[in-house]
Image (cartoon, rainbow, N blue to C red):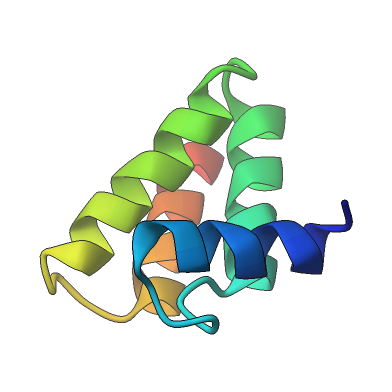
Length: 73
């Protein structure tokens, strides 16, 4: 299964629109977190980003940039 196939299938399984995940933003965030903290923080950071976006806390790219800045500080 490719990444795009997984995202499409996962969105369908969770009742989300197929474009619900900006994979570039999420993967960039995970890379920065993994390289600037301990690796297990990468999926946790992505999860927290999803929680914040789901709660309407802001634009995914802007929130990811804030988390990236946090780990690069």
